[in-house]
Amino acid sequence: MTVVDAHHHVWDLSVRDQDWIAEDSPLRRDFTMADLAPEARAAGVDRTVLVQTITVSEETPEFLALAAEHELIAGVVGWTDLTRTDIADELARLRELPGGAYLKGIRHQVQGEPDPEWLLRPDVRRGLAAVAEAGLVYDLVVLPHQLPACVKAAESLPQLTFVLDHLGKPPIVSGALEPWASDLRSLAALPNTAGKLSGLVTEADPTAWTLDDLRPYAETALDAFGPDRLMFGSDWPVCTLVASYGQVLSLAQELTASLDAGEREQVFAGTTSRVYGL
Image (cartoon, rainbow, N blue to C red):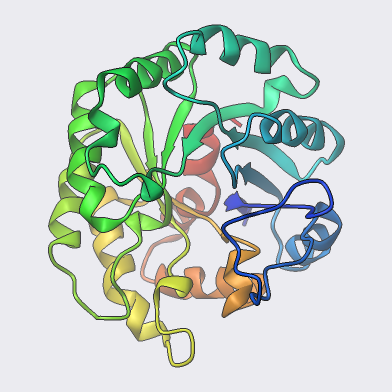
């Protein structure tokens, strides 16, 4: 079975700091394509989508150039300031850079915005409309309380595909499903949305999580989005805080074991390839 990893990162701390990583975290070291490639190949992963990590303009051109150099990378979800008045020109400029054809989407760390309705601000909405006009996807990295704003944003921009990273970071540690599940279903009811089966292991108890802890959240997402709008993502190297690359893929396969072969192909390759135009 073909496998496409819809979500991973890389960083080189000698090039740029990752200020979101704690000083004592195991993540505070370089993670490069040289580290990822052998792990991905060993796990049977064919292609990947490289996703931005910080909100600086220099990172996306670097990622596009990296995609041009590494056959494993099939697409890039980059960053630009959605509120800039010349965003359409900026998106066009990015596409003209070396590797520009690999730009498939844009993401901003909405989870860090104090305004729960940041996505609904007029200046942000104009930026999202420009992303749609450019034929790109918008990745949502949000917390559960921000999901209602995601629903409103997706309703107001039916021409833009919104991809929910990490299923909106459900509260797995507490075991609570609501209101996350209801809000997720409201988002998934919109045809211009998709979800990533990613990042769940790091939302669970880091020292005592089990597959059964993750299962209700994965099953809710499968029921809401269906396999044709759900995609596997490793969230490497963040996942390495609790699980290896291969373990995360195996977990996703176990969580989708009830699907037939065609449905699994959608989750592990088809949805990602179609949504991002790989």
